[in-house]
Image (cartoon, rainbow, N blue to C red):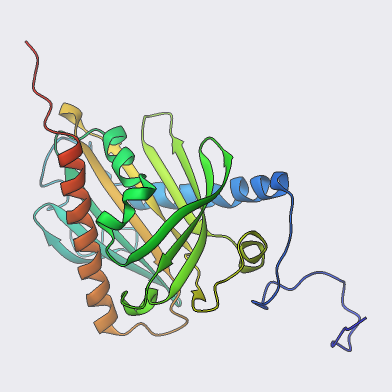
Length: 262
């Protein structure tokens, strides 16, 4: 058979070539995604930890210094919205946090998870659709960005899992990350005019505050394969601010302030 390698290595598929595709059973896919998403959830929870009593304060983040102890460098802090970045080797993780008054965690997640409305809060997104539901809280999704998107996302498509969990304290977590390219290729062949990219880690953590409000943390981890130009960091900051503002408007439109009942 065609085996170009001269060494007699075990017949284990290499995860490197992008042209390969693996066909696995739905049960194996479910087990893989549940295992992989566990670490993603823990990373998201760690990134959202404010070390505060989570009082209902619009200035919740305004007392932070440039480094909050987790290696996060605050890039912007304005109007109750914090945007931070953390780097480890070539990996860059961006975090945004903000308070939504009079919007409950469940109300926010309902808006943020409405896949058919995703283009309303991320204008770079051309298509978002479910490929497969593995469980009630576990799905495989295709995200596609067009040629007019920001540089890192231009003509990119992502095959990701989405896992939605409610923790024991009521915190809502939505973990999103790319499937390995070989598994993704087996589920959905790559389009000829797009680049199959990797979203290493992203997601939402939504904590309940007093008065039926919430604090939202959004995390996204990128691998630009080396140096990340400062101009890109600035552009990505702008993109995060835009996403936050769009989501804030959508959530508040969908969830008008709750009037106190007598």
